[in-house]
Length: 255
Image (cartoon, rainbow, N blue to C red):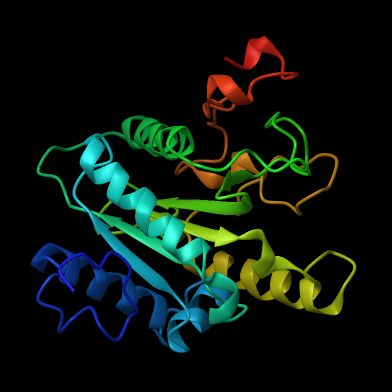
């Protein structure tokens, strides 16, 4: 039990190995996600939490090798079982709250550094069907040979409340979760309409212009991973760095 890295929602509050800070941030997360007065925009995540399909890990710091290895091991464990959990599953990593006050850009850097660190210790090669160039509309972050949509939440988000949290949080949603959800399917249209309507009420800023459909020629997935508080500020180039062994055939200018 002491080596357990992956938790479901029912285990956390009574677990002797989940740190007290972890129980506190999970409680905040759950209250935000399950609020009936102010419905959270991500309906897939809300349903996943209600049905106990989400899995969680608690990590002290993304800049400590031992901690990022723990994060990678938990993500690997999750990727091995996510299809058995249910369609609305996600993997949520909580990082320990810091006394140090960071800026939005510092959190953004921390987020992309974390993805890069995880990629560097990923034991499986980048899947052949997923482009390695982030500017390709079919690019997605990959781990254990699976494409994954990634979302970051931070304590410094204020206007974009849907990305605000009491600690640094990264959510990993396997691309598999979104199968059948396209702009041309009834399911996709319903999900998009509900999410956009909730975002309009939830956030204090308009929906980000980079929110789009996977595969659309004008869409870039990486631009949706970390959304700043305002809509007119964003990186011009993807900060994610492929490890050297995966760089063949990708423009050197990306690195």
